[in-house]
Length: 160
Image (cartoon, rainbow, N blue to C red; front, side, top):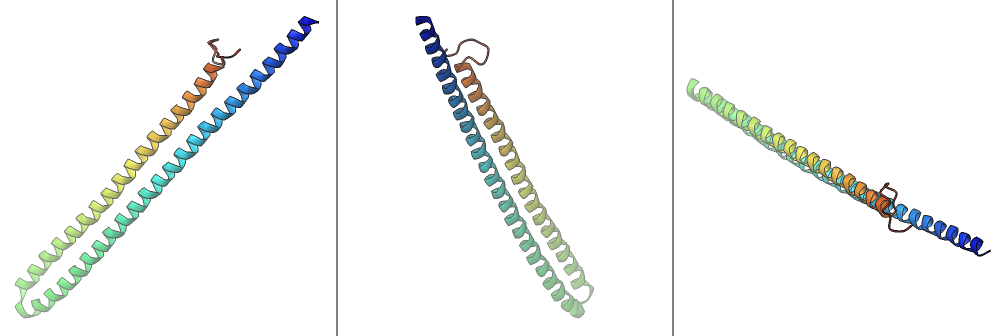
């Protein structure tokens, strides 16, 4: 009878230990998922910010290009009027000014595109690093829980 009672207590203790182990595993999984979710949200926010920055840069480049184009148009019209009065020399000077302005406008637009692309690439690298870190942290948490309860095959669990 005493042996039966001891066996029942051992079974009960084993059941309680298993329940606590399951609860701790669930808590670890929830914590890891929360970390993944938080990192994912941060990554999305960073990506959204990078997109906004790129859009602003693109809009500014477009405004600069439009302003340069208007300047070129105005300069060309003024040169055309003067060319009618002064001849070929004025036409040559206007052409040179228009080419320089166009080249500068193209360089400004390219610099803005390059800057936006660099920002986009930098953000992608940050997001990739964050994902790797979260995955590593989640794996470490899982391994620690397994080790603590002896599920990793080492037989070193804290409660048996």
